[in-house]
Amino acid sequence: MSSNVKIAFLCGSLRTGSINRKLETALMRRAEEHGATAERVDLADYEMPLYHGDLEMPETTKALVKHLATFDGVVVVSPEYNGSLPPLLKNMIDWTSTFDRAHFTGPVWGIASCTPGPMSGIMCMRQIQYILTRLGVEVIPVQVGCGNAAKAFDDDGALVAQPSSDLADNMLKAIIRRTQEKAALAANA
Ligand SMILES: Cc1cc2nc3c(=O)[nH]c(=O)nc-3n(C[C@H](O)[C@H](O)[C@H](O)COP(=O)(O)O)c2cc1C
Image (cartoon, rainbow, N blue to C red; front, side):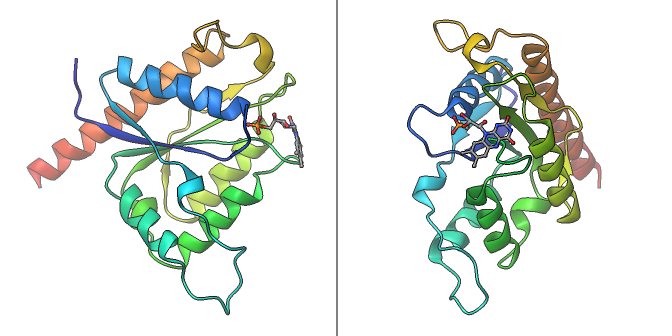
């Protein structure tokens, strides 16, 4: 059943063969199964130089903020680098936070991470949650950690490992539910 909820998916890895891209694709398909509209927003299309304060605001930063702000939900799927988030994502967050925060305060955000080993990116997800919360984002508390990537997907790329599969359902349903609650509140205002 269609929910009219639009969710953007952002991957923190541009690497060919990325396991986080694989998780992103699986989550997009799962979101569609729950009735949402899923759209990949590829950070390769929004290249930004490494932030420093003398640089002019890139047009890609402005375009990304405007585009993300049109969604009800944003799901960020991130690799873990040294217990933290990769520079691609941190740079995007820093640039966009200095332009406008409509994409942080409008959509509800969800966080996911995929790792080759068993730890499932819990350290990087915690850091992303901390940064987003500081920026005023409503972050869904359920996060999709997906460890042991080589065994997490079936041959069609569907996420089959538990508890990751249940976490994916719970996070996506929470984004849809919160969007509907916000719409109902706005209609009654
Ligand atoms: C600089 C760097 C640091 C990494 N640090 C971690 C880490 O802290 N925890 C972890 O589970 N994996 C770590 N890895 C391994 C990544 O999880 C692995 O390379 C993964 O495939 C990256 O995601 P991707 O396939 O989506 O690009 C690190 C990889 C790199 C390149």
